[in-house]
Length: 172
Picture 1 (spheres, rainbow, N blue to C red):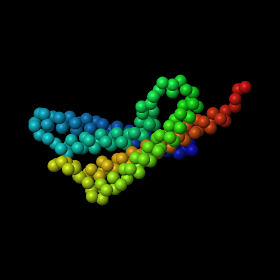
Picture 2 (cartoon, rainbow, N blue to C red):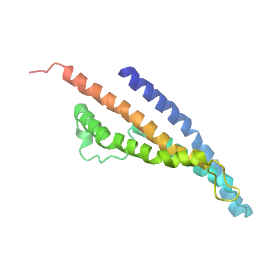
Picture 3 (cartoon, rainbow, N blue to C red):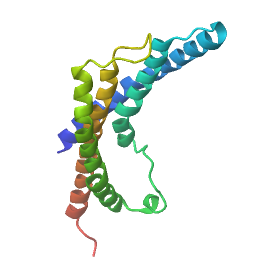
Picture 4 (cartoon, one colour):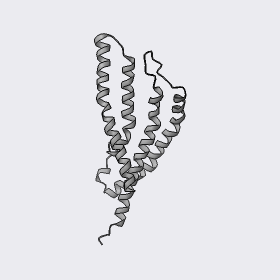
């Protein structure tokens, strides 16, 4: 179980660090679009769409990295005071009741949407736009799979915490 958690965590960590390199590209692309539009009066549709593609990629594929590092929004009124065992219970229930079903729902509902885009090699409707809309739409099921995978790692990690807490001798 530890090896499985390690492999998923390692994949998520490497992907997250790779995605981080897209952010400076996105910033440069945005700056170029603004300079060209307001400085030279020229629109650059393909570059503007590429910034959107980069943003979508970082956001969608970075969700698992954010989960791994505890960066998702949480109502933390009581949670920070909980013991590690109670936190493991709360996180496990949250993963089972909310995270994994949501990932399954996103995967199921986005599958046909994505396969249809691939079947017609959907392209931008904008003149001069990118011909890769099908790749952008592929981020939906990929996000669901990636986030579910990290959710399973978190669930296994919490299970190990709960099992280890059960195995510890009680001081009576």
